[in-house]
Length: 390
Image: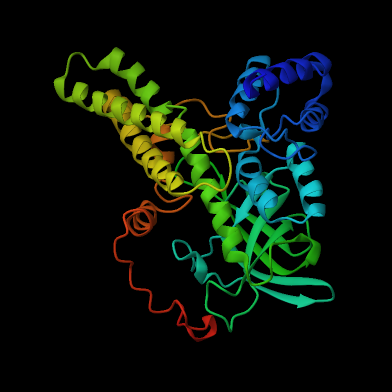
């Protein structure tokens, strides 16, 4: 029996024994985890069946058709970024505790960027100091997606300022309900408050919530970021801007050859990206590699070009914009939002920044794939405490 046939049979059994409409969200997700259908490529007992990760698409297709919860959409950051990091770096106890929490719907956010550390993530200044079997953390994070609706945060903090900036960092899983955590939503250009500032004032974290080695958090963070870029590449297969632009083109282009040429370019770009993402999805094990950076750049450029075309097709109507206020419980960008091309155009401005700027992605590809000379990094081996910071 093929992996697809096996997961299809098990998913049908799950839906039969636990009908989504009568079981309830948490109960259904717990049953999905027990059946090994949350992440089919995970080991048995940790939400998986030890199968090829490609078979997960069969599970999603059947769950979506039945109206069942879909963690890849509803808890995207926890499901696609937190879980792979826990699986790769967590202890046996952490894997059991944290993966089960994610699998039953716990939402996570990413506490990496700071006012003085974005593209240069290793320049973060949030400090974690050891005390009494745990850590005391003080600092500020910014542009934290979904912080206001999340239960935990993937936190990168500096634990040894005397070491070079990449080597004195440690990764934690933070309880956002802990004393000393303050979340301040940031209103963005679309009218939504998807991002937040997060202030940490003497926040206590148990050492049981440290993920990976002390001062070795950079490698853990890189695995999270690679999975984040892979997540954006997966979103590229959804073809939102292409479909929306096609609909508007059919209604409004009126034979304009310039608009037709642009529509063809957007369609081709989307088709190539879908093919590339499908090939990247065939990876059966290990963390994502350079393909995630390619997909991330392609996703950002497709969204921007596609939604720019949508606004040009709308003409004067592009100026009519109603602020969208998401329903309480919205869990990711656009989860409950109408497909308004004006809102999507404004939101697409962030696509070339979030998850790693396009400039950083191109540098990664130039150095690590094409083998071009690296950018000069004069501060790479200097103690962080000796660096001048703005």
